[in-house]
Image (cartoon, rainbow, N blue to C red; front, top):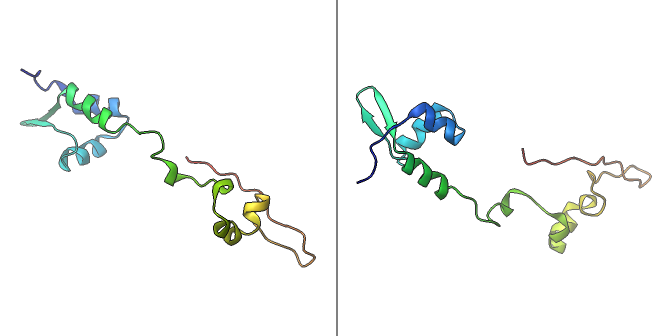
Length: 108
C-alpha cells in the first residue's frame, strides 16, 4: 500500500520552487494529485517526485526558445539583414556604415 499523504502544501511548493498559488493551480488543473482533509491539503511525496520526473526536460526540447543565426537558412539570414552578418541591429547610416550596436541576449 502506498504511503499516506504526509507532505504539507508549503513543503511541496518549496520542494518544487513555486508559490503556493501555483501549487494550487497545478492541483486544480489535475497535474498534481492532492488530498483534502478538511482545511488541510496534503500531498504524497512519491506523487510530487513523479510530477518532477514527468517535468524533466529532454535534451533538444528547448531549441524553440533560442535562435542560432549561424544555422538559419539563407532566406532567414537575408530577412535578418545585417543582424546575421554583423551581430548588430542592422542599421546603415547614409554613408553606408553599420550603426547597430550588439544586443546581448539572455534566456532569463
